[in-house]
Image 1: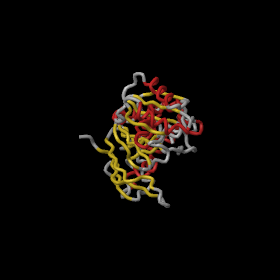
Image 2 (image 1 turned 90 degrees about the vertical axis):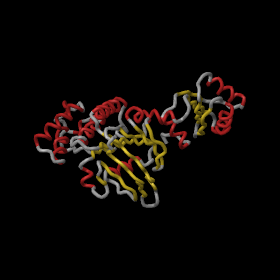
Image 3 (image 1 turned 30 degrees about the vertical axis):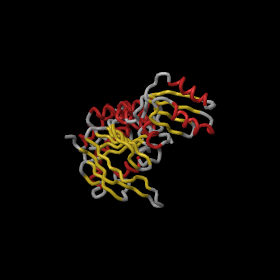
Image 4 (image 1 turned 45 degrees about the vertical axis):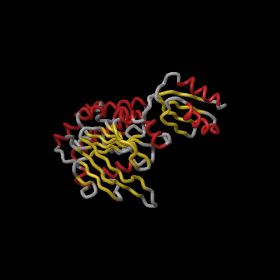
Length: 316
């Protein structure tokens, strides 16, 4: 039986003024898995991570990490979690090595153990050649890798990565993905929040898609994409005044249609079967006297799942 490392039951956060950031959220994370919270900005991902890491007090509900109630026993909970927030929290008065060494000492390691662990993590995260440099000299990607290294120095039960690659260049993002993959191979449990579909698809064993603080869908990336019931996604752009009519005619005349979603600037159609789809789309639009400005065809993605669930773009 898979060991459960983290659980939430009815977890809810309502901010002053009535904003319900997280609404009755039930999650269960197993040991050794990378569990993703995927959703647009403002979906409640960071608030959820904040409650699980004791930084945000829930309005109601319960959350445990490694069997510890994070509200009732926040000090004990902090001993079993590692956190990499969105902002750089490295100590700029210390060197790269010292940021790791003193973190280990803070979590109760003796000097010898902290020194050995710091050196190991510097090698693992490919920062050994920067050990004596001030953290201000690091690039954004290097600083992010150092924060991950620091967060796992004390071998936490769960590592929280909150939008870990936001603002990083593509090369740094790929380097961090490689690091997270290595942590998975070591058996590290990770809770990852992101609004990048490719990141979620690449890294996560299971994904919870959330919006407005509510759980919309849960499963592996493959299961979620298969849930669309389609194997082809057609995105069709047209003048704004024609989009409603375009959605209607494509929904009624295009063979194999599973779902049609009207977006701000396009119509997204989920279709079973791709043979001859483009001529059919152009023919239907031509008969309806609708001028198309762009047409694209792709396989179902996590964004397709989100559009099917909410009728809006994941990037909003």
